[in-house]
Length: 587
Ligand code: TSB
Ligand code: ZN
Image (cartoon, rainbow, N blue to C red; front, side, top):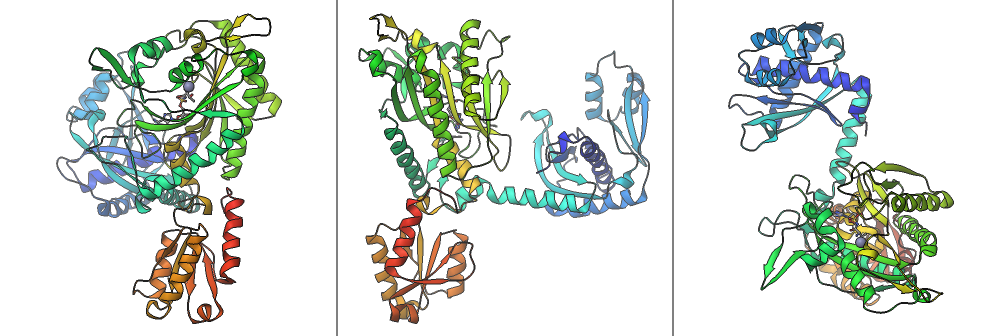
């Protein structure tokens, strides 16, 4: 999708279109007063005070019609410059514009206004030359928005729109928006009963429903197997820790704003944990280690709680209660590069299994100016940061660098992906840490018999199961690959009264072969039941009638494919088993 804000011409066009919208609204609602109308990634909006009137989606076409009329009239858009004093006088009846003018510096001696026909707005510009250029636009939606984003203020009406130079560009953009809406994991999550939320549980606290929980369990099993093969050992630890634990780790000083507040039980102070590293440090410390034992890889599917602003919470993607696919790898300094490479290779392998192609590696570095967030040891930071660069260069992986994105304990490699809606997010991460092992006084006995401090790699391949599931729902548009689908086959007897027994027999046969099958023997039309099977995006639909029953065969239709094929029951099972075995690929 085009990012309007990043394109100079589109940005100007959309800004002018926001003025056109305001002018049309003023014609239709003479009482209207206007706050601000900025350009955003998806187009533009204008916040409007309609003095009690309410604009609904169904009113948008009439506003568009008025916009078209004004545009056709073709008035020039003219810039004037006035002094602050003149501006205060000119907009004296408009409290919103007065608020804007009053906030401008005295030094801003000239204030610009733009006029088109009977409409003038305070604005920095720039604008297109004439409203005639505004031909290919669409109003998209309307919502409420508090003045200045403050819920104590009046609620204004925010009308969104977008404008392009050509009808084709506009249509392509609208199609992309519709595609994003259809892919949005919050929509699919509801439709396919994957998860729910409840105000009684709280914002950002998703409840995984059976279908979603099934998918998550498959993800857990998948990554557990891979990690076991790579020498990881998994543990269970509590999702709380004492304040002292997080003071020792440094989270209390460096990460507190992301944590839930502490609670007191008897005479102990606890916090819901935001990260699992401290627990895993203690597990490492439970035993004496020799250099020969390293790397030690402690993994956990661990529940964490983080404070995320209520406005930032989003479906399963950004939650306040999450489950990390976490591990802490304890290595000698000589093992850092090799272990780091193994993690990057695992990331690449997993993404390939899931058919994920659109992602970027980001090398997240400290901001050397930010002494508050990052501990002050330039030598340690420089050494850590250059180690990561070396690994990436040796692997030939492309990446970009981002200052100020490192964790407080060290630099990291993050994988960035684009959700259907909203800004990019991090999925996988691998972080290098020289700090926490010191703070927990960890050691191993080296070759020379001396005590040494290990280095820790923090890594999460799926990131959290929550965020990965959100992303993957959008990636596959809710059509999960066979191995992840809660229901793999939906069986439809052509005439339930005649073919139900055979359908039941097939269903039992599939289930006895570990295939997750459902039976739709409702007395509904065949076409209706087949359509529903497609809407639910079930990978295979079986259609069983006279011929299938006589020949002891099954006819199946794959999701999103035209036509059916026929096989023996055994051959069908083998087909599915093969597809599950080769998994992991999305169709
Ligand atoms: C990898 N201590 C490390 C760990 O050992 C850690 O916690 N790293 S993290 O802060 O980057 O979090 C790990 C992953 O959790 C992130 O890469 C991201 O994918 C995911 N994540 C972070 N915040 C949220 C959230 N609010 N909702 C869902 N997932 C999140
Ligand atoms: Zn960690």
